[in-house]
Amino acid sequence: MFPVINKRGGQSVLEYAIVIGAVVIALLVMQAYVRRSLQGKFKVIADDLGQQYNPYNTTSDMNITFESDTQTETFTNVTTDATGKEKRETTTNTTIFNETQTRQGSETVGL
Image 1 (cartoon, rainbow, N blue to C red):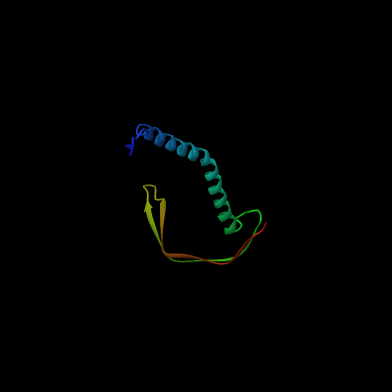
Image 2: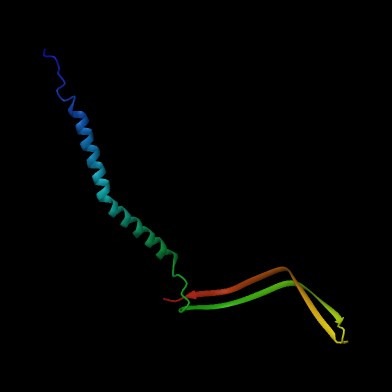
């Protein structure tokens, strides 16, 4: 029998480098196609969500209710100057507690 001699030992590194280079080039070429595919998927998802709000082509029927508890305090300070004239200074403080807003109704976006 003849002994097996490995004549290709030095070429295996070169072959791996060529294969890796080919894979990298293939990924770079496919990058544009992958990007377009993802953008297409995003567009399909956005179209499935429905029409977006359009202020010129939207019909609304809303009842909006505002409720709040307020407290108003008014202070009047009366002073008299040297000539005997009265000077009035009024200060008003308004405090709002528990303010709520409720919206009920429907909104339709046309094509």
